[in-house]
Length: 383
Image (cartoon, rainbow, N blue to C red):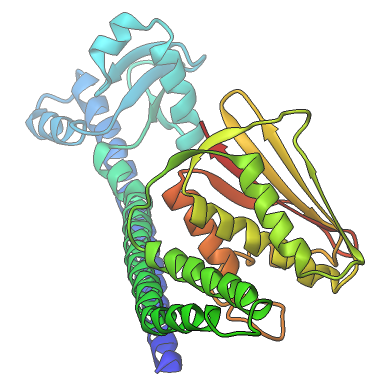
């Protein structure tokens, strides 16, 4: 199915290119044809004008008709042999009055476009005039039509791609939200049952050490279910202390990490840094970034979290000393399904980015990464 769709896209692209190329070549052919006809018109006009100026020719009706018909649309400038302007036709009279250099500029333009038609005065063989001419409006339209067409086609393609991309993202978001809510729903029943069993175990002798740990795990499952349930709906943002939020998640991850991994938090001397966040979802983001750092270090190294309170924003940098990300993969890390791990669905960072950017109106990006030296993920929260 995918290959068939790809083949159809290729065929349509080839057809579109062929149509545009054919239009360009045909338009150029028409432009050359019109240019040749306009040259003939100017030559006829020159000959007719000669006859009208010749006192020995008494029948000038035909010459006058030819002169009038062939000088309607084509702009021209008549000069002497020294290129001093003597007369002009079909030029903007208002612009001539307003701009003193208009005629000189047009003469320069016409010289570049066409060779002049030489006009020898029939009464004075020593007097030689030149007729310089430009392009008619029709010729310009035909010449620039392919460019206009290409612009319209390109604009149409861009709008179509944006519409398709927007639709795909909307569908993707609906799928994620539906999957997350269904997961939360499915977890609800066993969680309720587990809570009941924990309460029963509390009354059972000999379970004093086991029950607290089981309660923690059940609470953890409730938190996970709550996080999934918030995906797809507008979460409530509250003013929370980011330092406390980060400390709690670092403490949680640290207890489940090898002793060979060092954790540190740097708040640049601040004791409290507040921002509008949804606590459970923000914790989820920090947890995912910390776990990614652990996976990248493979059980040995250091993770540092820098929290900086700025005038208009709060930045949180999660820095690990892991294997880093290659340049070609930096642009892919937030795409659904992309992962370099042997396990996992490649949705963790995608969901993190969505939580920060769509729900918190902030930013999440790879600030810096170098293979063999580590990676820095930056969260930006607007105040």
